[in-house]
Length: 533
Picture 1 (cartoon, rainbow, N blue to C red):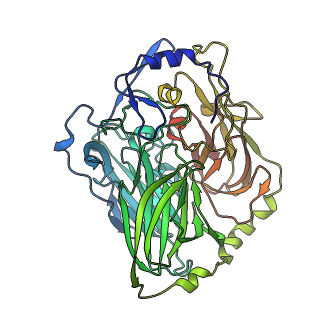
Picture 2 (tube, rainbow, N blue to C red):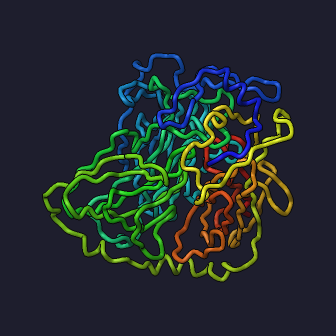
Picture 3 (spheres, one colour):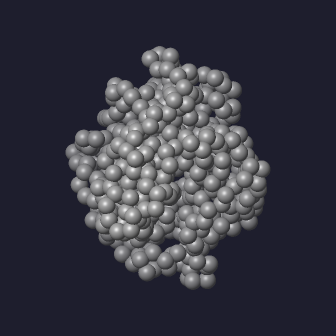
């Protein structure tokens, strides 16, 4: 992204006085340590980390994600804990559910209900949000809306039900900008009641992908003490992690078909995934299967989005699991395919693009509402003027061709931005209600059409992944281009300058947050409330 003007002079001057560290991805200086952030006549510091300035060697070592086969009616425990993890040879204090990074993969059958006991064993308050699941409102895990925070040493109990098949995830909903990248995330695989809903595969694998920002010494760059930093664009990391590993490896046989459940758990980075030339078939998204499967070259996922892809490793050799932007490629992992042929071949089934009549039938009841006028129009914007520090200006940026900022293009400005210097906004176009004052209402059974306009003339236009708690929706169109192959979703990527229409199935009673899933934008107040009666 190219900037036409820089009128945040005060911020830049402050930045010049603070210690810096080179971003290992080459995006410029990254401030860290006890830096002062001025605004509203108060100082904001960035010095918060798990066990800050303490030797992590006394902490238990983080373990890899286990699998918990959760039975209907079962009670399990998911306890946030302090752990140490070695990344690139450096021991780091982090968090983990049950001491694992990611947390345990919960495998549960569609239609089941279970209980989760949580004891908070970390040094910050927390909650657990069950992302994408249409569960009872009281167990949504949203502090200030459905529950109070779980203080260090305190306990809480969640009652979870899973009405829909698909790949979901759970994560903290308190200081998400810090606790999530530090390890508090995990997947939930809800297997279909119909065991023949998907084509057969040889193996399946859940992959939670994220990034982490480290300084020159290999330590995490500290987070804002009282609020998120990096609030302009969100915190881009310079180390990629797949299931908590920097060197993810997979050994397969020639002809293996793998089903990968991909989840983007990063704070702000949008990923474009591929498997190094191995043939990919997109079969599912956030909340289950597509109407019709499709062959794809890559899959784009914004923060919190998921995809289910089948991959055929047809020939022996080495394949690279990678993230590819318009400008560069990042290696996420390596797949080695042996000369030994797989015992049972599913290549024939892989070659077929299945259509799912049950998914289409479910959607049929909503098609009559596709062309109706929007019930609400939601505008995404930001304000650089809220604190009075900036004077009478702002900054304008040239929107990328695809509307996505794949890297931290703002450099020092993004690093030094704190929430008291700017305000990201979700605005109802009709009433002007913004963020905490923004309340949409619906009744169970309503088909709510929402038009989301991501302003191209915002002071800093960029993409926003918009997530609705506790409900599901269909993406109808993007910049007027109609969707042809539907899948139920809970998060939609709205590129800069784009207008996206969604149709929300108001099926779940309660007060539900909706927000941008860039963690720093959420922490900056970019959220509203949907009240379903």
